[in-house]
Image (cartoon, rainbow, N blue to C red):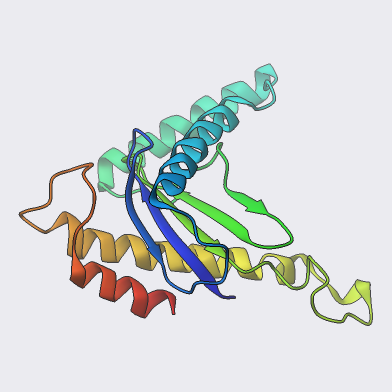
Length: 185
């Protein structure tokens, strides 16, 4: 998997970081990246509202699960799952690229644009369709989840701990840029 670009959006949908790690797609202007960030934020918000209406039994179960999750979060101070994006847009797959979105509990959205999955888009020869398992199709998604976790740690260490960084403002850290390039190349 080749990572083309990395974006970070604040909780209001503003683009605070953009890095073209491996140029492989058509280049976009800075204005295009701002439009892309706003569009992704809006689509993510709409997608999180579109979900099936649960039955009464499922509704009671979800209230219990939410209560348990909140209790664990308050007691330990840690989320059990770093990706709080459970109901919104998580991935967009096309023939030319894949786009993955990771949302933190604070509302930051990390976006990674990668090369398409060769198994799904028939970019590699396959002799037998039965040999493709769900695990193989999830392989690229799982590797991006690992990248998101490492990227979030880098953001926490090199941006949030910077005394000169203002929250929700564009990231201007050359050390963070260098670490992101090391991670994604």
